Image (cartoon, rainbow over all chains, first blue to last red; front, side, top):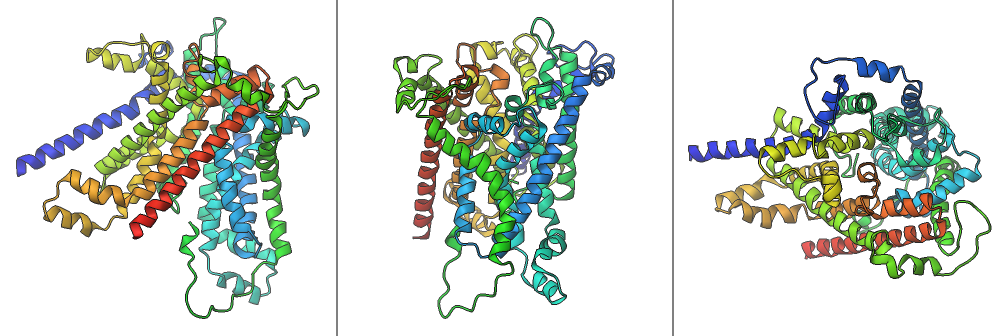
Length: 274
Length: 311
């Protein structure tokens, strides 16, 4: 029996190690090439490791602007989505608006069906008519519109979980109904706001298609699109710069994930993707 | 979802007064309504309307053309590379391959780490989850290096095992983007299934072990029926996400020779490269209808499954 236990243990370690390797291998190049002054497509230990690629990337004006634009678009969409979703979730939870529940369910289904490229054709047209082509605001509005149904759905769980007695005691102390949300509810649903905020930030930070279609000029493009300017005259990517830029672009999401995982534990909130 | 709110027998208690008046509630909803209307509902209506016209990217007067776009989409050349029918077939293979891989690997990982805690589980779960949440573009560059014929790590490993060194993006592009999509999305089913497995009462499996049931029997009779609902949600969501994903564009650009022309890339090409918005929106309509039909079929199946489980 002991022999079988050892064999099972070894089998488990072997199978999980192979699976872990399968998931790790495609990212290794992103870890080695940025520190290699003569990086090729080969995954090789840099000899010697250097920071010169980063120096070159950071000296490139458009590249740095790209990272700042990503930060601006992600932060803007995060704030707008979280604020608008908090207002809506509170209203849906506490006011008796006929048909509200059906409406939320329909929106959620709608938003998953009208995803991706399908919606970009009319959205391009709407943003064009609003005069917001090639503006950061255009990207922020479109991204927020797409994120909202899920954001509302996630926050609704948190607001519904709060007993009404919090607001009732606030009312006894003389609070007006419009003060409940900012002064009573927001502090209580802060974990939910964090989840939605981080989720929105990561989603917009990584987005490629929307900014690719709505933006034109170099000073507005986010890092995801700017990464494609590191190509030489033959149309080949300059791997040293592409890898270093990718590294800088991945870093915020990586740190954010590790922080959330450490603080809250990354798992499913209410059974739906968090 | 709403099935939980079953009416309780007996006299209902008086409902407490609403905390928020309807006018204030509607006021709170207005910003969300405005954004959702503008960027979800209007685009939907627009797609429906424009799919019956010959609108183009260059503007000009659009004319009503009836079902001409839909006929053009499925013309004689439709099953040749670059046609809509061809694209649908490729997308079908892409979705089925991704589904099998993501659900299979996700279930395997969830089962391997079932009731295990510790550093190794944290390491593997974090690794798989990062493959899911890191941005598309750097991940795509990583994969271009990984798949490279001469220098790529995949061929280095395969070569060391004497399994050949194929040119992935040139000779097996569809396999390459299916592998990429499986790698990208497995975390979702892994996290979903491990959460579901935690919900199985330990006594079920203990009784089964004591009475001598082998693992495959436990899997078939206890584990899979217990996570049936999550399996169905995974199938629905992965199908819709895979149908709409644009990520493979960053690896193959739809080529070579349209071999990876999945519908998201096909739509992009027709609408933005060729500027043919009438045809682009009618493709979008077909994709939306397919998504709706798939979702509806899965939801029906899940309701039937729930009813059978109760009976």
